[in-house]
Amino acid sequence: MEYIVYEQKGSYGVITISREKALNALNSTVLKELDATLDAVNLEEVRCLILTGAGEKSFVAGADIGEMSTLTRAEGEAFGKIGNDVFRKLETFPIPVIAAINGFALGGGCEIAMSCDIRICSDNAVFGQPEVGLGITPGFGGTQRLPRIVGVGVAKQMIYSGRNIKAEEAYRIGLVNTVYTQEELMPNAEKLAATIAKNAPIAVRNCKKAINDGMQTDMDQAIVIEEKLFGGCFESYDQKEGMTAFVEKRKVEAFLNK
Ligand code: DAK
Image (cartoon, rainbow, N blue to C red; front, side, top):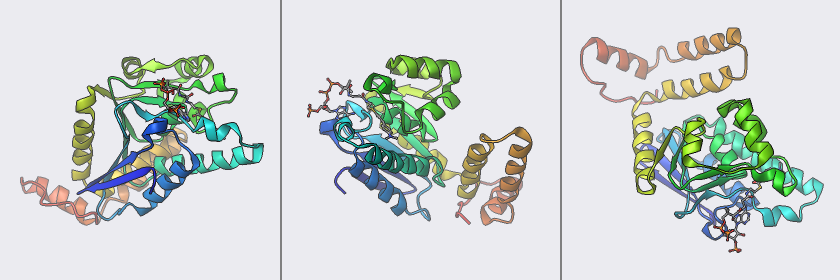
């Protein structure tokens, strides 16, 4: 891999987009390598992922403007499809993905963070959808995910104005859950990943699916989705161990992902 570093740390994995000289901008190679990295995650062992950027300045400064500038319409569509497919793969990935946003998260950088389940950032993070200043619309889901996360009014203001916002404002509007100092970001991302990884894996996966699928439909159908995923946890080893441990007033020995 040229631009992606993947490290499995026991029960969680850390994916680092490593193209520091271009502030980790997403060219087609980065997107293809990210796709291949996700395909290779050992889902028997790994229960949570962290996505971050290399260096101290940038998470992802967007799609690669140099590469995009010469694209024909057909090539632009193909580039958009690679990006959209991998962003959707992240969003629907069976296990939770935490975006540890360590700097610029602009355009495609903000959009890839929004494809993750949980966003936390460092105090130097900057968010924005500057695409209208480049003559395009956000193309990796920004017009769809931003309003779902921060509400329609705030999303429209950010997208129409192309204005960047700092970490504190991102926190205030609900785009990120927590702001840490630069030094504290990764230790806290790893602590959160380890906490998630300790819980019953089938239950965590089913929660992700219930939330994602339920958010796309009306409440009557959403409740049915929840019922099925709730029911799907029963008769598993982990459900029996979790409940038996409570009844016997002891700690869970181990969740075995079965
Ligand atoms: N692409 C390519 N290179 C980039 C880049 C980017 N997005 N952002 C930064 N770089 C490169 C710079 O060109 C520079 O390279 P050298 O000149 O050193 O070779 C290096 O990274 C360092 O950048 P700066 O020298 O500019 O660093 P500064 O600290 O001065 O400024 C900055 C940092 C992040 C404010 C600035 O670099 C900047 O404004 N970057 C562009 C941010 C941006 O506009 N991002 C949104 C890109 S548009 C689509 C789907 C999705 C998309 C498009 C199509 N389809 C469906 C087809 C997505 C679009 C976007 O993401």
